[in-house]
Image 1 (cartoon, rainbow, N blue to C red):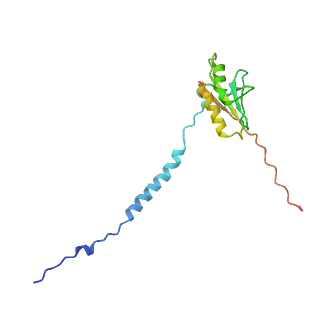
Image 2: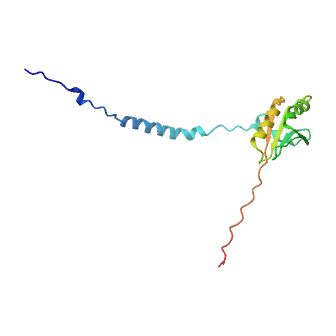
Length: 153
């Protein structure tokens, strides 16, 4: 009598079935494609209506504190040229007897960002409650009409 030998290890299938994984990934892809545009929309907040109907109109007042940063990095506090290191002290002195601790910072469009950051940090170190960043709108020029081809008809 001979012994029957069972070789079950030879019949084992070790291939991974990727079909369920692909199905799950496609469902997740579709979910993210549908949800992503919804996440990009936010609630618009109009800061002008929160505190003051026209908060930036106060920058045009005669007693407004304006810090200007020029293209070459020079800083003006009002009309006085000031080094960035002494800006904090000058702003503190000017704000000492004022109830409205609002300062406006205006920078040239070609100013290095690091210079503007230094000025903003100096102004904030002086204890400024409100800091306004002023910008200017570019005046758009209408596009010129296309030139007529040479040797017109």
